[in-house]
Length: 263
Length: 263
Image (tube, rainbow over all chains, first blue to last red; front, side):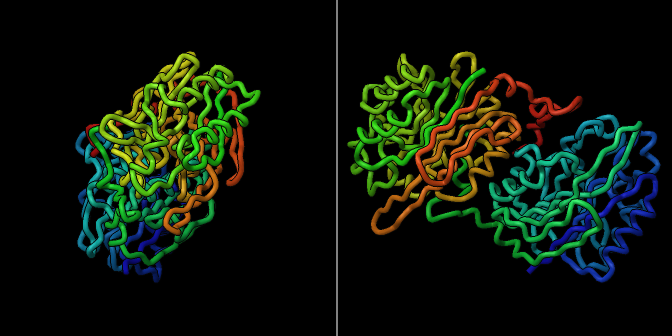
């Protein structure tokens, strides 16, 4: 069995150390093969301009303080941690997710579909949707608004992902239900780790919707957080169940696809 | 405004005339621009072999009794009727849907993704997902299990469909929720017309789940039938709302797609 989980918390802006401390406190005593943190867990969400956010962003190679802390924490939890983070790339900032274990960064995913004013802060992701292996499980990453595009989870599943790790800063009310369909249509596990709390910029508040969840390959909730509050949950799964796309004696959800008829 | 609706009923096997009579009775006094009937509304669902079903199938050109009756009924309802029907094609049978108005058959769609033992009765559909126009509205058809493949509704929406007409004979419990995601992710209206009741073949009963529904472009239910029983519902919609894929000042769900990163 493979233990997966999420760490719902409320990142604060302009204080990477405080966010590391919050995660460290919540992870005390937790052991898991895969833990997912929210989107932009190092920096918080609302910034007026890239130059305003840049001091809290860091490279994807693990040389900055946030990913270094995750590496240390992954040594404690005994697995891999997937966290959203503001990434400083060569050409600008990316809204990224990193998979980190005790050995360092395994993979970085740069968010494909930027939401609203994120387009003012970040470059569109250029990594695409890929799978990495950890202890025999195939894991893929997507970030927040990627949920709205069925092609994101589909591409991950077709690339072999058994588990979708989905760091989020959700503000619309739809994703937690839509992910049920994403898991079901692809027969994959999914872990949506959302943040909670309210941020404000120029007098405009933005409230995040919490309710982080772990779904099985039929879209059934194995765990769900409340809409507010720090919350850690784990569940034991068998990732190999996601390799079975057969839903009855005659239907295999992937073999039955007919791409020649799709746009 | 454009009036859409569904006619949930329980087709019986081996009696096309009885099914026409049931629809005719339910449509007495109903006027609507678009009405959707269940899958295989002429024939019922469970047959042991193609030769067993063939006597109740008919060509897609409107020359058979079921589509001829729909043409007459469309004259009464004052719009187009989309109904699932067993189609007799040149090479074999298809699980099809026809759009029929008072002038005749507008379009035939042959089910792309056959479910379970349907593979023993029908040829895989070869029409693909297309849009037809009726009174200024763009309508696309898909049938039942097509819901499970996000590419089906996506292809219809990318082809311009504002409304998805979805005749169904659902037996699994997932579709009515998944269609919420289908409407939302594509910003289209959808009308899932399901049947109810139980059929049995070789001692194996199959119960259909009713709960037909009309969804708006945010996936909100404008009408829903109970899980059992004849039920007609209509709703007034503005199909042009589906042309707006913009969800905030910076995101357009179609312009934001990045097909170069999709499988």
